[in-house]
Length: 273
Image 1 (cartoon, rainbow, N blue to C red):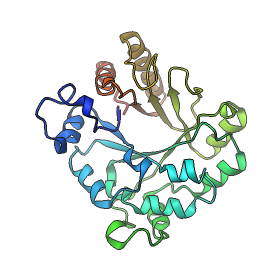
Image 2 (image 1 turned 120 degrees about the vertical axis):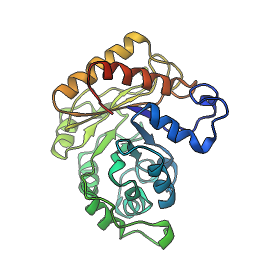
Image 3 (image 1 turned 180 degrees about the vertical axis):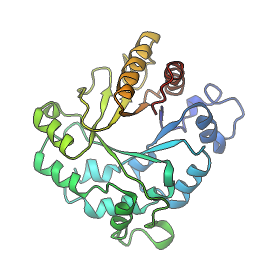
Image 4 (image 1 turned 60 degrees about the horizontal axis):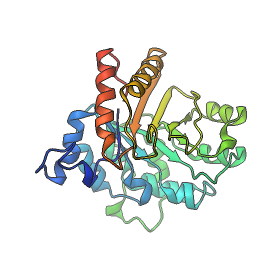
């Protein structure tokens, strides 16, 4: 249970206590929640030293979901993605060790369902840290030795979630493809901005809450939080691994909503992420 990112000026003096040092914000968040989406990795390749630092600031049971690079999803549009994937996994993702959670692939709204394209992309995705390390060894010269990490710190599975934003993904063909490849279809709540694909396609359930009534800007009412708590409990009761991240950060609602939802779930003895 967490937020999409943690470094927002509007949270300072609100969610974060006044006077809290910026470098202590992640550690503070990790005392209140049990997961976060790393979204800086969407905009650019990060450094192994950054991933190492983030992992060191949080408890052992904290999880980082890592957002795949937009160069892969929005610029390459998933085509011929192996070189960019090698760079992405070599950039330090493996430095998270046991705290590495799902990898999120957010697609542009202009990208329709293409079974061949998606199938080829899914075939390239590493499903273990060892496979990610092998892929990372193929990185190009953009990543120097000090800016790359190809040796996994732990042996663990890597799971993937896909957030499409095109209506054509509302099909049996799309659902079946994700199920066959054990990819979670993101359940996205965006105040009607993008379609919601409310299906479970893997043993991972990945929910992104972008705003209850206004994209990025509105908070979630107590009734809405009760609704999502009930859904998360239901998925957890089915033995599914549930991750929920709030992305309604424009007015600072995300961390408060995440903390409230986590509190509701803990009352029911459930602990989805």
